[in-house]
Length: 422
Ligand code: SF4
Image (cartoon, rainbow, N blue to C red; front, side, top):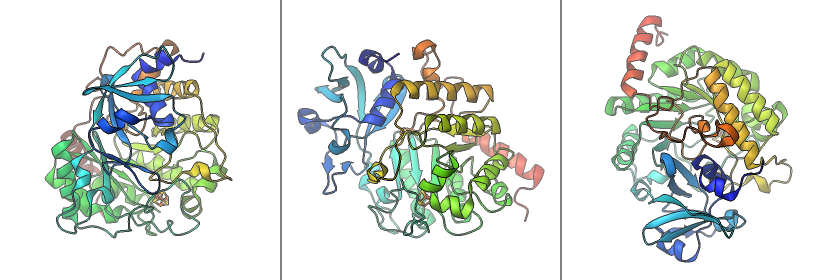
């Protein structure tokens, strides 16, 4: 059954999905009234502050980071409107209601530079509401070659930087935390051509972050050559690990992610993910599959298989990344799902993670993705959000994981099995 506009606007889960995949038009008076000045650069790419997209808080504490760049969103039916300081999202349909939202001003994080090396924070990371992601180095050996992941926008707009001083990253966390309710730092690293998958470079940053803050650390890396590095990653202080296969279909994985497919291989991704579930706590291992770059049946098969392995599937809907729009490539097939298909996919994601009893405290607060925690919004009959009486934050199912408890578990486990022993 096709969803009516009124249903979509009344449901934060549907609205987040729609705004992320179709974007939001911000025009005329609303554009002029936005807190912070959006700039549309020579490339036509929107810069809100310097952050890119617009951050919104939808009803029920649901964060969404949505594209507003005119070229990408011109066909979206959704518009941002305002009455003084009161903001709402509505649609072009004559009887469309208005859903009140909060516009989150661009973070002052993007206006500052690191004290030691003078690099703008916006070049080493991003913060969207409670989501903080940092890359101590943005080098990746695939970037300048035909092995580059086809969707990857890393290094398109900023110069490559080698590993930054540890104090710069600690400072970035401090600055972000002063303004945002950040409970987890996501540290990412690309392909450095080493057997460890890049985590050795991250080790001093993880240690320093853990020393200075009561905070969780999630690592996004490539699978290492041998499993000992997975033990070491947990032992060095990572609370969660992602090895992102991105596409479940083997041929499409090889086409879209040629470097990881050639150098690491799909089998090693799956092996490493499986092994990591024996090391990290439940919910501490996740894998992204991008929705829209392969047939939905393939994404769904991957989601089910990962969940059965004890891996939390994270399913971002494809959208241009850092100004790189893969959809312009003629040889890349497109499999854009309808909203109803997405609803069913997320409903089944919610069922799969519940069936496998996977912890979800480590995959929440992702403004750019419909998280498995938010997937519960689609679990009611006809997606009519039976449980929306509860706020997402602080509910039993989506409760934030405590950094202190996670560190305590690690201390016990490292002692028990000697994870840091050579
Ligand atoms: S591994 Fe792929 S996605 Fe990651 S930085 Fe390198 S090219 Fe980009």
